[in-house]
Length: 355
Image (cartoon, rainbow, N blue to C red):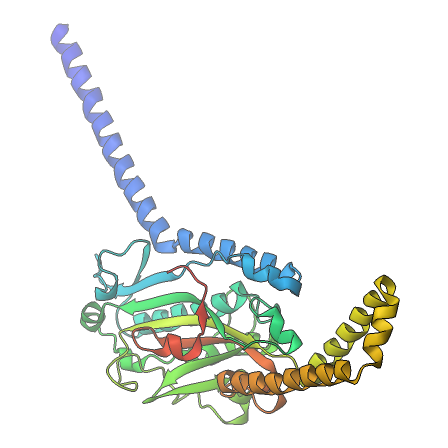
């Protein structure tokens, strides 16, 4: 009887052991799936978007917006392949890296194109689709100070080139524009290009040996060819290779000279109006003095000349995605850059994202 009980206990122990083992395997698989989905990145994007909307809702006067920090963290993505996957040299010892494992051959190539296209669209959506003023120096609205371009780096995408090569994926063949032209946005019956065009989207991409700019509005005017305009990740771009792509949002704006003049007149009327209420005799005397009007004329001229200079600066940043009057007013654009080079400083006076 004792021996029977010992066997029974042994049987229960073995069953429990198998159950625990299966639970651990199931937990490991679940954890692996969660990490692959990249929930952390999705949460970070939502936090970023909320901070963007909050800042944009604040008044511009007094530079209040500039004191509200953006909570936008750059998503680091390592693209690899294989059952266990490899690692990206750029992210060794880095924290919070989202590893994306793609399939072999053409299927893996398509998955990479989809990933980059989705990151472009997510960046545009997270930053308000160009519909809100996220950045800007309020003094420039009055013709004072120098306008600056501001950026948020949404994503950094590096590639395990050795692993991808073993999987039969040729990075030279990656063609994001063609993918965006031919494929629909998830859960929408509209292509990536059509969706972004409808929302006023603009982006720039590296192509051949230059930075080639693509305005979605021009895409259908035969200025870009989806069959040939590939994003050549490992081909020479300027000097050296692109080892890591950066997807960033850039925004810059400058008022027109008419808008500055209008604010100038409003300031004079408001200033003298308040002064007349508080000190009518002093104000009346000041208005009669030629010196007062000479000073006001100099200030007005300075604001107009300074605004003209700011418009030239703005056109320099936006002339590749806009033209004419649009380029001097400013732009909101998603740029795909070579993160490992000087492209960031080329396009951004200020970067407000968290590395």
